[in-house]
Image 1 (cartoon, rainbow, N blue to C red):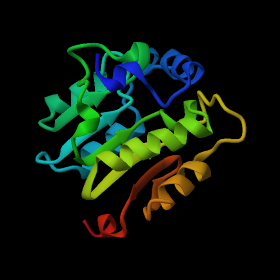
Image 2 (image 1 turned 60 degrees about the horizontal axis):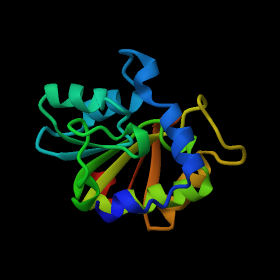
Image 3 (image 1 turned 90 degrees about the vertical axis):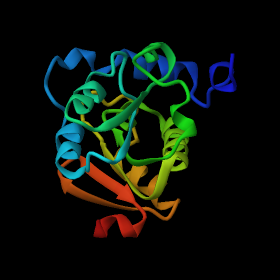
Image 4 (image 1 turned 180 degrees about the horizontal axis):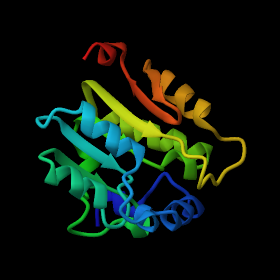
Amino acid sequence: MGLAQMWSPYSPEVIRTANATARGAWGHRKPLVYAFAARVMAPADSVLDFGAGPRAVFAGKLREQGFRVTAWDFGGNFIEGAHDRSALLATYDTILVSNVFNVLDRVGIVCATAEIVGCLGSGGRVIWNFSADPHKYVGVDESYVVAEFASYGYVTVSPYPRLFVSGVPDFLMS
């Protein structure tokens, strides 16, 4: 058993809450993060679907479109064969974070942001959302996530309501 399986920065409550809100309940509807990502990513980009959900459905759909996508999730959502246990050890051009931050508490957001930043390659970008539903923790909104990315020197733009792109300022030019 590796360190990631023995220790997690996320509390058991946060893991239970996040796992209980997995994307499987949404059927075949394509969340905004994936629809936007498919329009702006290059097929050669290395992509991480951070918090991909138990079946990593949208990571699979992006693979079918020719993208190089690695899926990762935690707790009971991690399924061998659907997710890559070593995904957080690599770097990526684009990291997709769909309906993850809105189900984490403040500590969870700090931990997730640190993991995401640690996986983002030079000049990479994070495409994320902060959905109003489900929203599990009072007092946590998208401004908290924007501030977390800013603490790493990242800027965040919002091309659509509740959709955000974060990265070092160079990502705006690509």
